[in-house]
Length: 298
Image 1: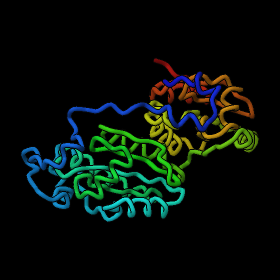
Image 2: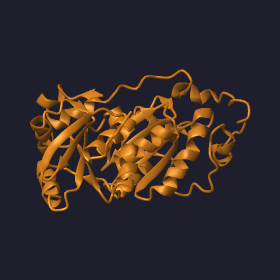
Image 3: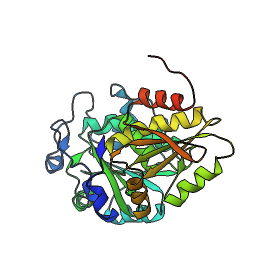
Image 4: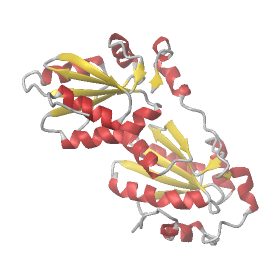
């Protein structure tokens, strides 16, 4: 769990600087060495990434990908900035890769599959060792290791990851790009109060997921929240708020005595009846069932 004690006394603008520092992993390729054109691992001996990505299913654990037409290849800073501007407020997911990185070839098919299922998200691919222009782009974006994933909204980098697998990539895309799910997105105290008022009459249980933008456990548990929101839509309303989105959200967290995230508030008939602090999937499901009046035995 992440503590928000230090966040409570700082403005939301300072929160974006508190995400975890990226730690270089020795198993990934370092950009300064990419110009040496070292031979790729056995089984991936191909001089062109275009050939590598169409055969990426050869990597152990990778799934077959039919088409990557929704992943835009970017070749310069100008193309990159144009793609971000065109996306406006949509989430943009960028993979920085290289021709000689086995890890890049292994994760790419999963990004392609996500691009096909997440139509409200834009996906970009930057080959760091393609040319001096792409190397210049990597230097500007401070990308030192590949594969590297960066997430942008409204021309602003909101999150970045290194050394992640398919599950983490999917979780990040859902967490930062989710806008058309059963989970209600709340952006102020007024939004919370309106949601509570709307469901006084139907007596539905409201499960409010409170987190922070750069909270790893919040991202980890969110796919479970999404799945439950679809399975329990008849009896439970799921909502989400990022405390560091603005002053109103942060004041709401302080008033609710939220000191760690993720925190799940359980609301019924306009009243907060309990909470669960943590990211355990089983524990969360158990708490939801308990507040629904279902007896849970262990």
